Length: 339
Ligand code: NDP
Image 1 (tube, protein in one colour):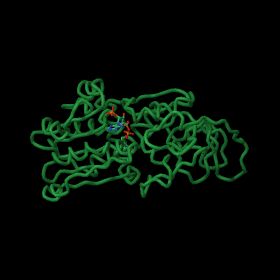
Image 2 (cartoon, protein in one colour; image 1 turned 60 degrees about the horizontal axis):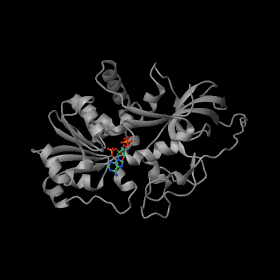
Image 3 (cartoon, rainbow, N blue to C red; image 1 turned 90 degrees about the vertical axis):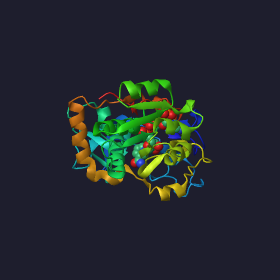
Image 4 (cartoon, rainbow, N blue to C red; image 1 turned 135 degrees about the horizontal axis):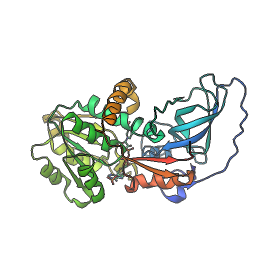
């Protein structure tokens, strides 16, 4: 699956194409490359920033390199080794790391990939909530926002891959948690299945500042921002003194280059609010801690796993476009092939 052209605005069916290319299974002896059969890939909003033209007005389009139309698209996922010229891997090994939106990938030596021991868990868990989505939620909440018990936490895109985990971790830590999402079905799920204290459908609200005032009459201590723009402004205007804002993503701005958050900086100063952007990849040092706590919660049934899987390589464009329509509930993944 590749892009035909650089994507502008919201991604459309016609931006994508499925190409058939032949991958030679014989690789130079000792070159360090491996060839894998892809099994499961992650579908992530940030990919859209890689699909935009380099001449876009963004100075830094994305923290990952741009995608060239017609070329393969790298993505995080799980695969099975078919041919190995790398001493670290053997034929038949399961691996996790940067593969591609394709049936097979040739992975050059040095690319981020490691052996995976599934520990009896579904592969989707490793790609999703035990992978970067989970680490993002964990690092953003605990490392950036440093919650205290009883803190009042607001999460946007709360039924999504990162957002649902932020809310669940914050609840388990003893915070008061409100989430927003784009449908009543999602709102119900947040309150009834995931244990959020409150949730609302942002598409039904006309004045987000007053909406948040209603849900947080005593102010917000922590805002975990997944969406940017108006929601960021509304949340910041309702923050308490010494509030913390983790700017994880600004999905509403990815498809609309005219949208930008413009929070009131005077109140940021007077209230000494900390606003910090972050990348999960900078927090690999907390990965062991994240994994052990998350596995503990999972084993005692305290954490709900929310994932949304489509099947078949052909479903990738639709799965990806669906992120910007709010189709997904939880982590969006595509299973390309059976184990
Ligand atoms: P999600 O699973 O949350 O999927 C995206 C969701 O965003 C949709 O389901 C939709 O839910 C919501 N959404 C889409 N368009 C809009 C819009 N215009 N306004 C408001 N909400 C919208 O994706 P992820 O959990 O993977 O990612 C969430 C955010 O975190 C993204 O911004 C992403 O870029 C960022 N991210 C950042 C990382 C980092 O290291 N900093 C790592 C991973 C993700 P709804 O129905 O509620 O609208």
